[in-house]
Image (tube, rainbow, N blue to C red):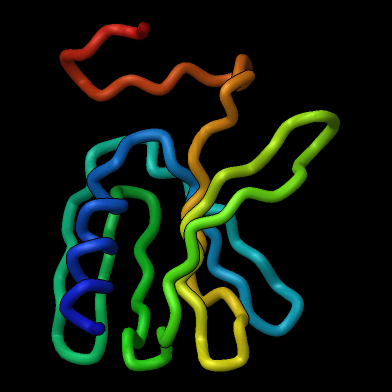
Amino acid sequence: MISGVKQLLEDLAHTPALVCTVGRDGVVSELFLDETVRKVEFADPWATVEYSGWHIHANLDTITTVRFAEAPSHGDSTSVFVSLEDAEGNAVLRFYFPHASQTHRTYNRPGTHPV
């Protein structure tokens, strides 16, 4: 399973416009993937994902489940996300895709144009 998690994490880290949340014990950090990733490295069982303004280290041995889901969000919107979870079902990392109605930010990769 760990090789699949590594590939998924690599793919998600290179997907623009996602929001990565890291939450444990009553605290959640929202990390915006709105620039080019600087580094994704693996030193089993650890993964490092680095952007210019932040980085995370995650112990991939704690991830036992990968769940693709959607849930009600603010107002009438729906959040679509990928959740990497531990054995108790707690999210170790969660990656949110932008809401279809997202209007307060424009997400572009360098050299691309908005649709």
